[in-house]
Image 1 (cartoon, rainbow, N blue to C red):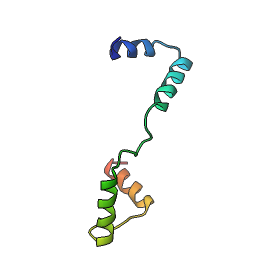
Image 2 (cartoon, rainbow, N blue to C red):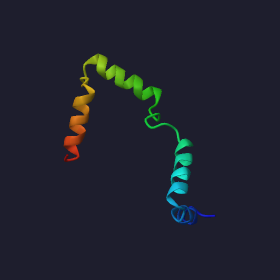
Image 3 (spheres, one colour):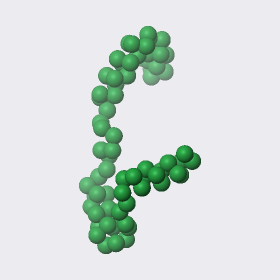
Image 4 (cartoon, one colour):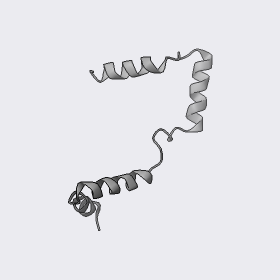
Length: 71
């Protein structure tokens, strides 16, 4: 069965069954944000320690992202 066929079958399911299927599929995926390598973490630590970059508070990060997205 092809992905397109599976998608069509899944979309034809009642709401409750689609929600159950979606939850089961999501449970099989790795957590978001876990794709950062150890090398990248080490590089970013070096950048912070050297003063090449400056840390910002989470609230500031969120504000900047929202600003860039035009919110």
